Length: 423
Image (cartoon, rainbow, N blue to C red; front, side, top):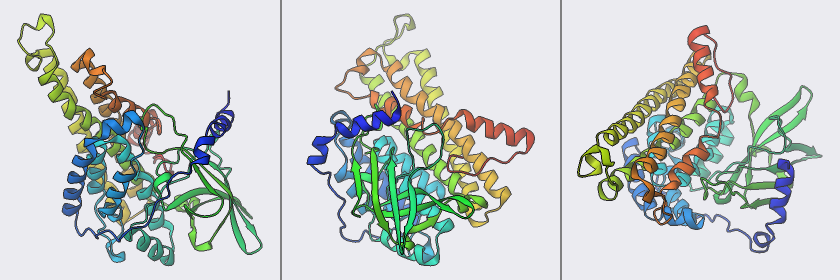
């Protein structure tokens, strides 16, 4: 069975959804403008506590987090990477990573949903015109959310088949996308398209309004993890777009830019955040429910020496991943201020190092939660398997084995990593 057939079957199976249209994100009162990194972190910590309360129920019932997403963006946190000269807080990459990690610890899906919102804003910062920046930064500060329609399935290559064509004086987008995390909740859907020009195929990122005629979103994501990210399908049937919604994409990678490492550091934060969430529930579960192994000769699981060693290992791995993310964030910030071959390569390698460890640390923490807590931890009422399902699903976003390749090639041969969104 091909991916194409699978998509066709999904569409055929979604007649109920088609007859009962999905909600469309509304525009509400303008969110407050967050003024500092410290303020952003305080707000995120408070929100994360709220988001954790119903995380199990949302995951078990696959309840899309409309209320939580509205609360999240209404806090002002979705505008924190807007540069100060355009009215935003312009927070550091480390602050953004900590916020994503805090939210991911509470609910991995909610931590993931705004990833492409911030990614698209970085594409805008790097390649947008002054007019485009002022327009879209203003929309974001007013509360607009950006989703994504980047990936396509059904083919083994990475060629984009969603097209941007010109019909007299109109620009038209047509095609289908999948893995469209955040699109369900978005006001704009940044969409990767291919356009034919005199030099061949050129890629653009087109910011398309969610309500534009011809845009259809299907909630057909059925992965076993990240269940409520809304990462389903988006189709574009001859959607008319305005010229000022079209941003260069390929051209932004032809010269050194931070688009790739900036995107990847957010993925690092999601993975390590889920790991921190897993450890946070592991500790009380062991104290209150777990039994020591018979050969340990102790009265409680919290005194079991081999269990303590395993907990210590998880703790160290997560803290080490945090440290590498913080270090990588400094390289990203430097490269944003002074993008050249060396600073961007250094940022990419530093983020690859952080990604390698955040992947293994997140997986370790979520796996050890179940192993150390014991068989009772697998009961569905606790929903503790969500951490492993979420981090396992998200870490498949791109292969960590290629992070080690990039790191080794740079360390041994001085070879700079390729410039694209996955490095």
